[in-house]
Each structure stands twice: as C-alpha cells, then as structure tokens.
Length: 145
View: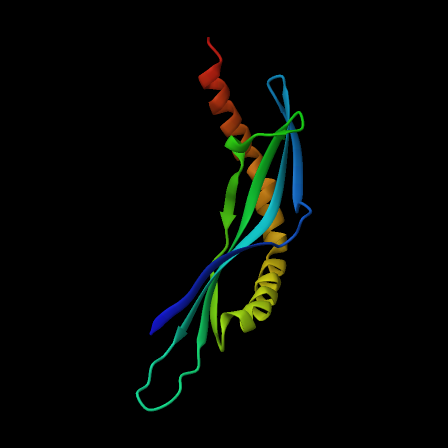
C-alpha cells in the first residue's frame, strides 16, 4: 500500500467559546476562554493487485480537544494557553479519494464534538483551579520575598 496523500486540517468546531471565566490574581485581571478544536489527518492509499484496478481508500484520524486561551488587559498571554483535555481519537475509512470523503469526515467529527459538548464545558469549568495554580507558580518565581 502506497500513501498518496497525507494532510492535517485544523477545524474549529466553534468560533464562540464554550466557556469563559474571569479571575483576578494579584493585581492583574485575567480572562480565560475555552474552545473545542479538532485536527484531522488524512492518508489515501491504493491497494495494488496484479490483475485488476485498485480503488483508493481514504483513512483518517481526528483528535478533538478543549483549548484554553488567556488574556490580560486585552492582550493574549500565550504562556497560559494550551490544550486542557483531549477526547478519545476518532478514526475511520472511506472507499474513494480523501478529497471526496472530506465533507463526510468533517460532518462526522462535528457530530462527535457536539455530542461531547457537555463534557467539554465541565472540563473547562474545572480548569479554573488549574489556571490559578499555574498563575501562583509564575508569581512565586517573579515575586521576591
């Protein structure tokens, strides 16, 4: 089997945050926003048979996660932005080219992410304590006692 096409597509499940939290730490106000995001990897293979034509097969794997973005005074703070949760990977295959299967895969990934929306919101709400601990750690490094 020969891989013909390998690509990574980043798909934002939603442009609006699934959750946002405002917190004050020290003298600074922070806003944390959480989004679900997914990435899909496609690989197209064509089995080779000596005496007949081959039908390409598109294999794919999607990773869905909850990302955190943090801002202070309207400015992004990339050091605190990260993936806070990863769902179990989703994978499958379709007979035909990956270009033809892309819309079906995108729809399946969107359904998968939508079915996990309540869990994503719960994870985002629980992340507040983790963020406060990260802010405490950074402050401990910068504040001289």
